Length: 282
Image 1 (spheres, rainbow, N blue to C red):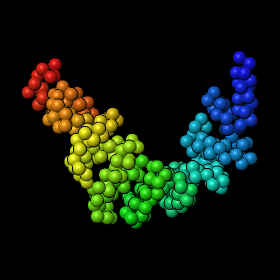
Image 2: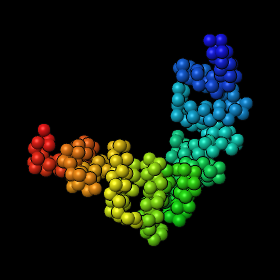
Image 3: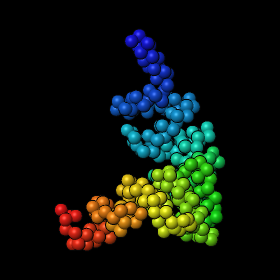
Image 4: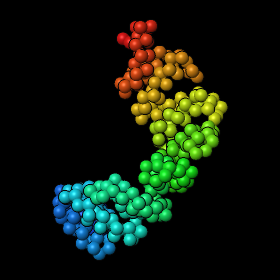
């Protein structure tokens, strides 16, 4: 009991000495103004975490009035301390024009600055910018470069984009095998679209030897995330007995889930199944 009390006392002392921790405790207690004042004092003393937290409060109006100018001020202070998080936040503010004039040039400069620090989201966003070509000239090669850098930092969605680029030949010759490699990497990271595409590649034998077991596995992973197309395809697999014994009950269950997610073909299949086998729909 004494040991626990000593540890608890030490914990309180550490919290008391950490202004950001104290500010968080005050914020959670609903004392937003007090939290802001604690952070402001610490931020002026150069506390990086305090600068980031108070900037976040100002930009989103978390418990206090939104004041984008003050948010930018503190994000820039944090950026001066080489905070990639602050640089990325500034890029987003300028890109979206959050209560400030949109400035795509400034946004890209801040994204590039964060990218130099290997910040995954900044690397990915640069890939998106060059892929989309809205604020810069579209350049698939440049986009691919940034997506690859983002993947090196374990950015899952960037791997999906690379798969799409190789599948559809965006700026390069289509390469189904390479597309699958990237899709499967993104699928393992939990990207639902990549899981569906990986399943479809294995199902069709696109860029790889046909493998219905692997196709079913990836459709199941996507279905767990509520993907209607995957639910529909699983219903079709069990309805036709593709790599599994035919089972209309399981097919019905998958199609019902897909139909509840507004999948039109699943609803049509349900209607036909109920006409052919009324007992399955009871």
